[in-house]
Image 1 (cartoon, rainbow, N blue to C red):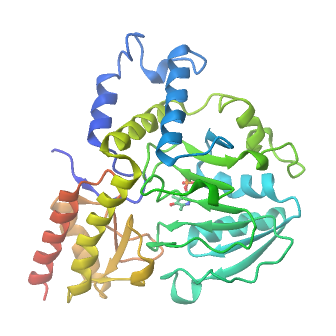
Image 2 (image 1 turned 60 degrees about the vertical axis):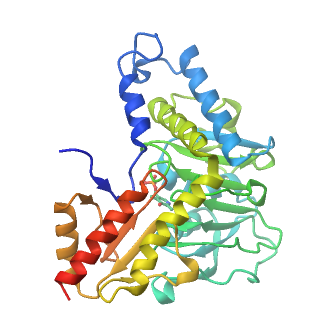
Length: 360
Ligand SMILES: *Cc1c(COP(=O)(O)O)cnc(C)c1O
């Protein structure tokens, strides 16, 4: 069997070129006689890999010099704790709750201080992004936290919240490198790479330098202090070397594809094919308010749980994998990250049309 169209929300599809290149270098990385998996993280070869990866992501995202790029472990979920530990000087932060990942971060912050829910879209099962243009932002907040793209519900902020001068912290796990960003608008941008950038095991945190200090909450583990990692150029301990190497290859691939502007155009084109179909379908319906639709995660339903199940099973048999919606919401979800080719979405839509005709 060849490769399938993999619509998984994460870990997710990676560019085939990257996988092939990694396969070619598996036994002997650039004449070192060993795999990147086998080499010291203090070796010259790995030092070149991590430095080059940092240089490339800086170039792609146009990251200013006063931001550090940290390659970390522990998943995005560990940053749910690291963010308050490093930033909650007044022990008070604001959270905008737009889905499960934002809610988990909000709940985690409550362990360390007062977490204020500034807005929420729970009233309509997180199917929209609340208006954040004029929120009631208490003066003593240490930061305002968002989950920028809601992987499970398929919503995305099209404009960032007005934080009224407070530091903005964003979990961008499922929209990382999917379109250009203005890094200067954020204090911290972080994401697990297994959605759109690389293999599971790496988290990239882009942190403004003035937010990195020894002034962290009492009891913060050394490993969770951003300063520890920043001072050691992400080599305080053994980093996830192989994952960083693959991320580096994905950065090169994105550069070759034309950078983040080109990625955005490619992603918009793909998403439009699917949303246009959903908008005219008599069987399938998108579940998100159109203005807040994600380019990356597209949830949809038939309205009949049995029919949803049948669709997922038949799609799988036809080579479209991982279309089942998140276990907490049901229905279907097609995650169409950077590496999903346009043909994957075109063929999915063809398949949906056929299914619709057969099940009318
Ligand atoms: C997947 C995901 C997470 C959790 O990531 P882990 O690396 O498994 O901890 C957090 N936030 C968002 C937006 C995600 O999509």
